[in-house]
Length: 511
RNA sequence: GCGGACGUAGCUCAGUUGGUUAGAGCGCUGGAUUGUGGCUUCAGAGGUCGGUGGUUCAAAUCCACCCGUUCGUACCA
Image (cartoon, rainbow, N blue to C red; front, side, top):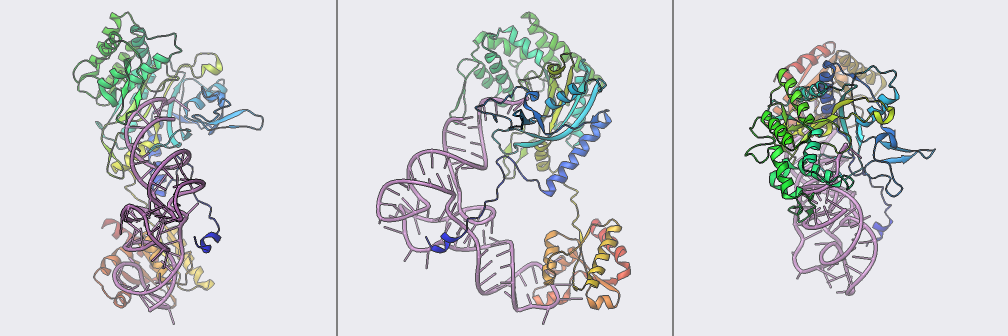
């Protein structure tokens, strides 16, 4: 190894933490555009914004009390001066419950509210999955009836369409935790194992979309399922009779039944009701779903938009009633052109116990969350975003560097800005003029303004149409000729600058 | 977490059975061009070969572990 290399000072490596990403101008504009459209829908439904901070005391967030061994499992946690544990929020629902409980005396129920913000999860990131991402939530707090859940489903559907996702390209799938509980009661899932079998069954049912009936049956049974890398997932340990009953209740034994099939979801519900009645299980959950179905159908939302599907599970933690999720039905491809299984881009449900933890009194609530970052990835690949790209500014170049000239350039820029035109003066080292042109080219500036002393003496400026210039330049071969030709450039009276720029921008826009 | 693949310049990649000073294209900087993007041409900068340890006379190349990326799976409030 050469001495030269050894002596070289070690440079600090610039890197961002795993799962955290910088956002480009295009991403920020696309996100803003989406947020605006979502907000419009929520406002129209009569929801008001509220904001809570990124940090909460850990015990207020729920189950993730950091134990001393792994204080950061799942959530990012830090200890405050007074040794209290604080965590970055991992969703917007738990903080809302805290906000409502803390202000329960001032808040008029039912409280209809929305908010968007960054949430954080300390887990393995993947493509389209980050450790910091944005959610946009809407909730109705203090609403016990299923009509509130029905409204949430309709609002989700409206939001999808407001974002430019066509009817038929998405579906809101609806289920009820009470239905799942009844199914499990009817097959007598073990209750003395700390809920382990119950959770395993729920997880298995949730996989219907991914692995189909065969995979779910494997996961419900004792053998479990082997994936293509040879990894084995333990089964829930149900016997064949139990599995048969579940399959009967969900209707999955019928050909082309279940999610995304052509069968009527009304039949799915009727089948569920019949099967659960026969087994002597509660049909309260099915009745609720039937009520929701009646409401949304009456409001004109058919099953191409809102669909009842017993394989929807959602979170295992706090949902108590109806649950729903928004799913994209079209193929999404990534940058490499590969198909990506996109699945759910948002979801929610009824959480009647979340506020009660603080207040002791029943405060039933329902709400949903849209994964903005995730949905944006899909929309971007679909070409539904960033189509009206922001036009780069008009560039006023710097020929002369004396204060008087600089003032004159700045005046031009301000005149353009005053007329609502994006404009800037070249702020790099103005020594090399061709560098200014290269800058304008790379930025995509539509027009360049040039005024040297020749023009100034005659109260003129040069206007250069960068788009037309590029077109004309293609025919020129020698550099001398190219420079002499000054393609796309013409002289105007300095007094007409704003009008001429406006005129040229209009011409470019219509081309 | 488990299993597989991958990691060489800013980017895309080449680098033979282990063998001298690790290369190309694009991009970047500067010149040809003291008032014009593109083309052309000349020159230049840029590398802990992901990291650490090992085998060897010799490692980008072989081995082990770690880190990162990625695919599947698990978990997902």
